[in-house]
Image (tube, rainbow, N blue to C red):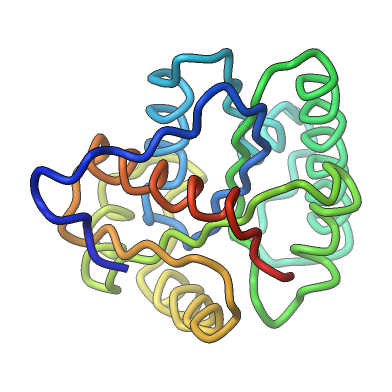
Length: 199
């Protein structure tokens, strides 16, 4: 999805209480964009990071990089339910929220279906999908358990390409900085409010 032409007025999501799910691979910039977007809205907005909630588990943290197993899957599902509960609580109190997660298009029941159950049918999903080279470069700048191997990043990015043709809005932020991506996200959301995507 291209950037709006220079001089085009920025779409305004107004005072609508929104629930947004920002989807993308590791290194796509989901957390940075979500945090910036939440901080710069005119209305109260919360950023809820699935990774942050997963890392609340200190002792016995099941790191998927060490191998995806029943334990890491259980912690992931628990984190998603916790984020969903927080989102519903914020929304019930008139506070918008944006969540970020690496949802895979080949696991819709676990991914989008799970978020829809936990947050509600008004959730607006948007895919953030820059090019592979950009994702690899951004991932290399990460540290700790958030940094993945190049092979893993490439595999995840390849699976994310399945979102093309899904009907969900996709933003290629390869050439955009965080503020520009957040502005484009606002434009996409304004269109989604007017004509909600079917998912």
